[in-house]
Each structure stands twice: as structure tokens, then as C-alpha cells.
Image 1 (cartoon, rainbow, N blue to C red):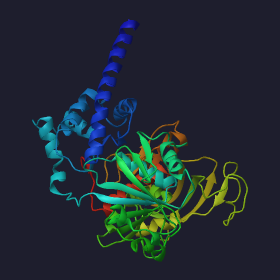
Image 2: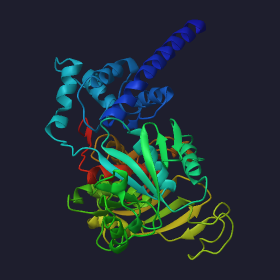
Image 3: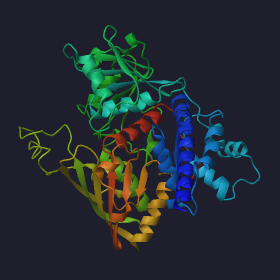
Image 4: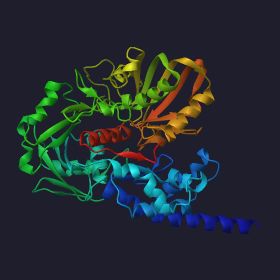
Length: 482
């Protein structure tokens, strides 16, 4: 009997592997050629392995009454690959489940059903053509943005990485820059091929031809000399955070708009995608993508405020150390940050709680915040101690946040986990702005404490790319609609 069960299990597993391996090239082609991101119940499948695809399908049983098999979702993916598409996020898990088990087929074939569900793609999304992108600075965020943009390199890519700008270096600098893009101690090896053309000063990566420009300031650069026009410059240096400083980029020939990957000062709009991206107007030349922490907490705070109301609260950030700190004790202009980052927990300040108000004005003056830098290289946590306007209980709050992560306009920003074993390293590479740890939620009537994980490097970079698309006039829908 046991050998029979073993044989059945092995056949089932082999079938799942076969379908997952068939899905891989289709998912990759849809992403590279059309900017279509495929997911299963919110779990992104871009750059996933066959095992990741199997695990994503297994997770459906957490949310639904029955499981979703790969052989049931594969026909939907296959049909999508034969349809004319535009940039969007498509959850084939939800589409397949609704068609198969929620009675939405109504006598339609899979192709007819998909055609109906994807109607919004036909109604909007006029594109302006490829947007030239320049990364000004090539540190942690710059290199991750490069990886994300290179992923989308293809004939119909909306964002084309044309150049990176760095300070003048010594001999061998180009190879070292390429090596840092090729290998990453946290996020692993680059998924593809990277080579350099020393004579042309170019990094070639998976079809992307990236000019490396050496300059001490924006004033030195004429981008049109490199065939770059109306570029979106993404400044991830952190050197300038106000309009006067960032405005230097607009004085360079070939630049149309500037995006800052840090909180901005003055009247520059701080954008948290999913919350206030509609504030970006065509005439806006300088925009900020706020901070990683602001991006992590604002979507969750919006969701909670919409449903329960927030009277006030405190946000404590447990944040991985960054390059701004010292490896060993040394001088630093900021208090405490001069002490060794890998050896200490370091109390420091954060403006993230106050910055929430720039994206979510209804919370202005209601939140305080502080931060503790801890000896981990990536993935952070926000602990939100909130006083609510409406009393609730733990299960109700968790169920609501779970529904937000699955079926709301914030589903691309808010993820949810019910795991009792998850730790920070499990979240490396998360593409969400924040992940609600439901098992840590505490509720006492109108008081709630929420724990939100976030990959402060990669998850934030994914948010930045979404803002870049918005500035380029590319509207990326999430389908099926919530």
C-alpha cells in the first residue's frame, strides 16, 4: 500500500514539475517582450524557479476552499501568450480559480473569458514609446534598479536603461562596476550575462547596452552626445534632496525629468506608489519616491485608516545597517552612527513617520517615529503601535489585511504572511513594499500593534520602478480587478 501511495505522489510531483518548467519560458517572454508580470495569488513569478511556481500554486489552498493545480492554470498562461498585451500585472491564479470554481465561466471558453477580463487593457494605456532612463549613481539602489530594468529589456520595453553616471574612477573601474552588478552578497548572482566594452565604455547585460558616463556633477554632461533624449534621470546618490540641487539635472542636455530615491525637501512631491501616485502630473519635472520605510508603512497605514481610523500612533523601525554607517568605530557626523554597524544596535532618528503625511495627509501630526539600526545587512521591520478610532479584534484585523493583500488596489504593495517560522532572511528579494506578519499582530479593542517586514533594498526598488513608469506615462494595471 505504501509503495502504491509513493508511486502516486511521485507521478503527481513529476506532473507539477513538468508544468512548472513549461511555464518558465512563457512567463519570461511575457515580461521581457510586453512588460507583463505574472503572479499567482499575489506571489510574483517573474524570475521564479520551477519550485517557486509549484509553491505559489500550493499557497492558493491557504486562501481558497480547494487547491489550484498547475495543469489547471497552465491553459490560462498559454492563452495569454497568444494574446496582444500591454504592460500589466496578471494574476493567473485568480483568473483560473474564478473561472473554474467561482462560476465565472458562464459558458465562455478560456480564451473568451480572458478576452473579457482583460478588457481594461483595450480601453486605456496609450504609450508614449520607450523612455530613456539614466541612473545617476550606482550604489545599492542603483544596481538593483539596473537589475530590474535589465529584466524588462526587450523590443517593447517601456523603460530603457541607457546610461549610468558615476564619479571618475581609476583604471579597471568599468570592470569593477560590472562585477558589482554581476555579483551581490545579499541578492545573489545576476540572472544572465554581463560583459564590458572597455573602448566604448559600455556594460552589456542581457541585451541592454549601458553607457557608463564619468562626471563630477550634472553640469558636465550632455546626454544627447550619447543618443539619449528626454531622459528620466533617477538620482540615487542622496547628495541633493531639494529643488535647487536636483534641478541641476534639468540643465543637462537630453534630460526631461528627475526622480529622487530618497525623501525630498520643500515642495517636491513625495510619492508612495499605490497611495498617491495620482499626484504625479505630466508637467512635474522633479519627483521623489520617498524612503524605503515610508513606502513600507504608508500602504498598511492607509488600509488600516480606511477601515478602522487612526487616532494616533508610534512607528518604531528595526532597520538593517546601511553604507552610511561604519564597519568599525570611526568618525561620523551623526550621533551614534560612527559606532560599528555589524557589532551594535544603534538608536537613530527617522523621518519616515512624519513623511507619511506627505503621501497620506489625513495622518498629518498623528504619528511619531524612531529607528534602531541592527546588525543585519538587509530586510527591516516596522512596528506600528496604533490607537484606532474603532475597536476590533486580532482575527478581524488580520482577515482584513489579508483581503487587502489579495483583492484591493494595494495588493501590489501589501503582502501578508501567516507563517509562524518566518524570519528576516526569508524576505530577501520580496517585491512588495511591506509584508504584514499576522502571527505577531496584537489587538486590545482600540489598540493595535502591527509588525511589517520589508526588503529595504529590493522591495523599495520595485516601488521606484512603478513610479518611473508613472512618470513615463505608462499605466500598469493589475488584473483581474479587485
